[in-house]
Image (cartoon, rainbow, N blue to C red):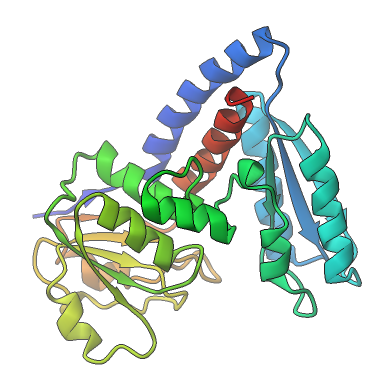
Length: 277
């Protein structure tokens, strides 16, 4: 039996249609939701992501401000730029495109973002709020994963979710969100022993490890739900799609799975920030 394809484009299109209505209402109050995207240097992949996000903003009527800074920038200079955006009342969301150049302290830069404008969910304060279930803006990709599961009416409560990866903006927050949805969560990482045995127990498996086609079908149990949050060079995810396709009862493609919903979630958070004025 073929698995259900968890089509993120369908989910994101519905989200964006809803957001267009909300943006229209805001504009009637003379409020134009605005997302500022900071790009440091000239990383081609980052430039592509920034363009995609700008185009998505344009689609639904959000203003997009692009702040392109030179690669020689220091951490303090980057923080000064972020603080100027924090102080600007016309800016509702701030996104620092990562990775930043190696000489910059990325964590310090993230922490400079005002929590009320942290629409990408990268600050430690935002993560803490996510873990407690009280935050407005969880990290966008983890939030997208939950949205996909909910859209397709896939039960989370009581299920064993196995997350492969523990990054502070993906693996850890998605584990927290799943726990808040009453899943039993196992978070695996590079030091995990017997990974295949642990994955075999998962009702829901999340690929968030940043290694192309890492998760194999023979590591999974029949009927598992597979969500691939990986995005590697060549549009390849963290899951070996071919081998997992015949095992899973539902699976996200790459591209067209978690990615479009991540961008729609970023837009949603920006609109919500503008609504909270």
